[in-house]
Amino acid sequence: MAVVPGMTELTAPYWEAAREGRLVIQECRSCGQLSHPPLPACPRCHGRDLGWREVSGTGTVYTYTLVRHPTHFAFADQIPYAIALVELAEGPWLITGITGCPPDEVRAGMPVRAVFREVTDGVTLPYFEPAP
Ligand code: ZN
Image 1 (tube, protein in one colour):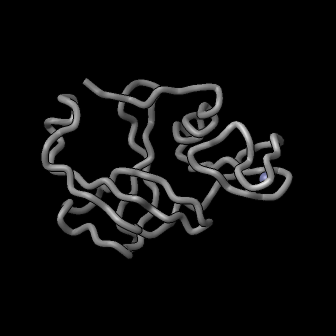
Image 2 (spheres, rainbow, N blue to C red):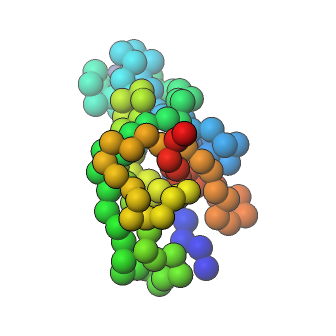
């Protein structure tokens, strides 16, 4: 069984882009602020003219944790796994799973890039893996 995030009107463009293998971040068209997760108004200028910008998908692990006890039974067959706070090259941070290397090899400062994993029919999650 897969546990997938809920999709709202506010977050739908993020998940639709992920299905296409693209990482997008909400952008304020008034001041250029990038916000993740998306918000109903810009946290910098309070503007409501919000759009989406495709970002590079590259970033750096700021910090991480190794999950050794599943937080939900659906993740029981995946432990241990690494969850990281990744700082994107464009500035925003996002919380994500790290794949493509053993969990105990994840390090703060590690360069990473987005990869996309279809977890259920119609739901694709962005993960990050070590960048070459
Ligand atoms: Zn703004």
